[in-house]
Image (tube, rainbow, N blue to C red; front, side, top):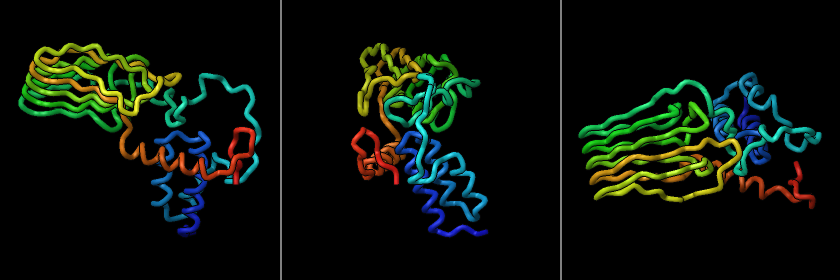
Length: 229
């Protein structure tokens, strides 16, 4: 049977409540929400919420949850799903040109980037990690390399700049989350620059804002939990 706009909106509301309660990580929420508004039939909508309680439904308390399964403070990332698996890239090189690694890719446990009279962009905000600890070695000679990481990873920067810069910016910085990968950025910049910044993508910031606004709209029951329904 064909789905109506009202039915799609009810599914979207269920997804918004689930991400506000920490049942869905942010990237899975975005994927399901996108699929919701593209769905044309009931058969496409049902799997998107089949593992979620309906808004307002009573939920039994969870007993005996292992600390390893608990998401970090931001509630956005299930790091266990983003660590492990073979690397899709372990190096990048630019000479009078540029390179980019962004979106869904898997960074190797040792990644080397070289930019000579060129530039490079290494974006880890939506990336997976081959190992719980990765080392990114950046070498910029009369060029520049930008490294973007999620705010809640365990980040260490210790590169050297000579007639150039090797800098870390702390925009959107936060404490490392339990289970988050450790990212070490090191290397050398000669008459060039390497910049490391912690920040969310625009889409992630928007989704976090929407989830927080939705959570705040829920009346407080007085025991630290938000009332459902």
